[in-house]
Length: 160
Image 1 (cartoon, rainbow, N blue to C red):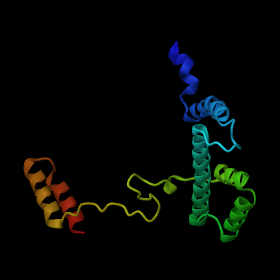
Image 2: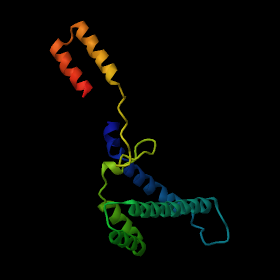
Image 3: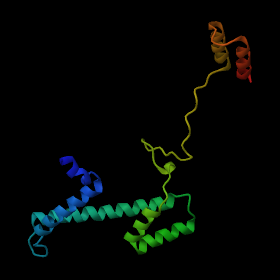
Image 4: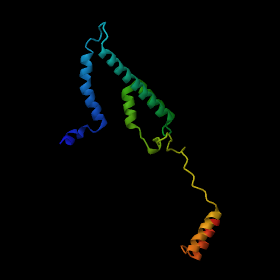
């Protein structure tokens, strides 16, 4: 029964929204003396929250500008249009850019900060010499795993 009641609150954005709806009236009620000469505890808390959101917004805009500049799939003119749109209408421009951006898997960073794009090199296969391959083939022929004809065919491939 409790699991069914809590099911809508499993997504992080719903939890954040509920927390905001519950916490906002408490913070606003605590800051009822804003504008007076006294500084209360809630004024300090409210100031920290405002500072956090301003810092967060600046960080988001810097991340979006960096993303626009780093993209290789759009031209320079389109990059300039996106930047102008974000400067003129910051919130709407950033929201439209985030929604309309086509993100592919090669853009996602892998754990450890390595990109999966074309710059990431594939791991080289372990090198085995021709002599090692022929020795393995001889061992397989001696054990009866392959016939003499298969041995000759695989030996010719190894020497090629």
